[in-house]
Length: 352
Image (cartoon, rainbow, N blue to C red; front, side, top):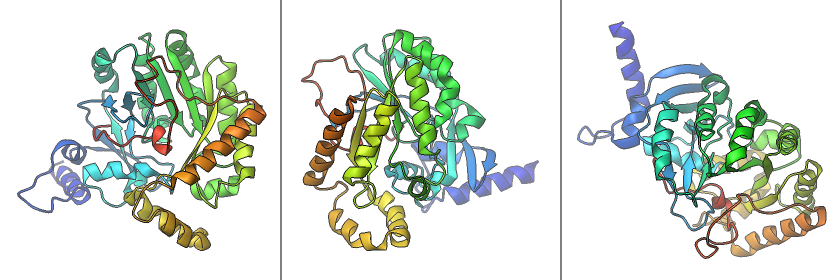
């Protein structure tokens, strides 16, 4: 038994190296290093993560919500463009691919959330899945998202939004309906393209778009407000008028309450993964991306405006709404429009 324990400690030391003996790991990095392996999948390792907090405060004026919850750290879907890879760096995991290979499963989420909800005011909104998908395959094994929803179902008057790429959300239709009875609940299903072959390249382990559309349809039929998030929009890959109108038309076909689009947001950690992907599959676009993202994470304002106007045109054509969250607050408190991909995926809170 002692040798097994030593092997585990040695393995964790390899995952979380301490480059200087005088600089021990602290905070979330220390908690992650103390995690225990609880399961393995195809090129994926699952590790426990003890929670000191579950709700992460969001102070950014870019977004329409105040609090964030991410049931997992890391995401198995392996989307090459994912901005949230940076969150593993807080745990001293610097290889961007570790984000999809080492999934940290948060522990005791129900009791932690019950305690923390006391600090959420009636006019504040909570978003689930801002950095990692709450319905990634790990959820089938560990049910962390389900536990969070069951706790939320015990409360009323909350403003809640949930973002996912997975049709696994239908498993929790019963508890979602219960939440919706006494709270403002919105489900946002992300679809970046209707081309299955392209989607398999961009999002290797995410469910097909038709399954996601069917999930929106069933959620709407169950009386839950649900819509489609087309983000990120990728220049030269998914940003043609035909592509964007296709998303709006598909949203209308399943009765979606809204559809909106936001351009790619490329942080340095994501760029290290995304650029090799471009070089392999879209080599002619590499100079364009290097020029547009040179020294910055956001695309030029003109490009963002083009995407916004196109999607507005197609929303109006197909009769679909715009807003993600149902917001009840003073309009002067927050901006009235989401301005970038950061509108769904804030990056301020290290404890998310």
